[in-house]
Image (tube, rainbow, N blue to C red; front, side):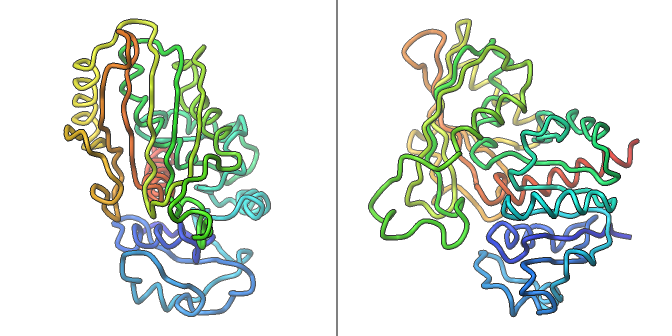
Length: 328
């Protein structure tokens, strides 16, 4: 039998992407879909303006939206705004439902794991400190994911002294309708409220002692790209690190972690429009170059902000946390 799950925030951009990823899953079955209270009792197809690239599965289109207080299942995937997640997630955890959250509400809580499974799934053990019978697990901010995935192999080469980070973030990261076309067409916006703080704090929490003493300086930008976040990263290592060593360690990690990376040798890639697909869980790495000194490396890390940066990240945490719970 499949494991039953609920989806909270099912009509939003991330909720739609999660449906496109979960509907044919081998292990998990979407039993409840939840949106705002005004939609309770409606058919999903009547409540949603479906914008995902995939076709809305018919059986999900004809599911009835459920009141959040009526769900009874093993896991709930939260694609909620933070203000609602603040209330709903602890309430459901107290009922014994495990929450896999894409919301920012509890990411910085010391007892809540902030997990990218390939990097730090050992952090799942933090749930043992939570008093509720259901546990809350979070995935990082979308830009943090592609920063962390780029750092993952690099920290094997040398201690890192400093990171300079510039992001180019697609408009779908702001949800729908996102940023006004009047503001963004032919333009870039050199700030996203709260994003730099999230990026820096979350990276340090994910890596813990591995980034002990590392300083991070970031600039975030909203750009006129529909889907895809690009991270321009300059890494100052304590020791000398050569381009050839960086290329080799990414190749080794790509083999070890089953295609986690797409390495681009063409200097005009990665590009969001050309290189991403609608179910893309990879970090695309390119423009690896020496950064002006023997201990400085620059590169670009790019990925699908709605997949690996949000809905796909939650799905991976669901899969790995379920394995963790079954192993206890």
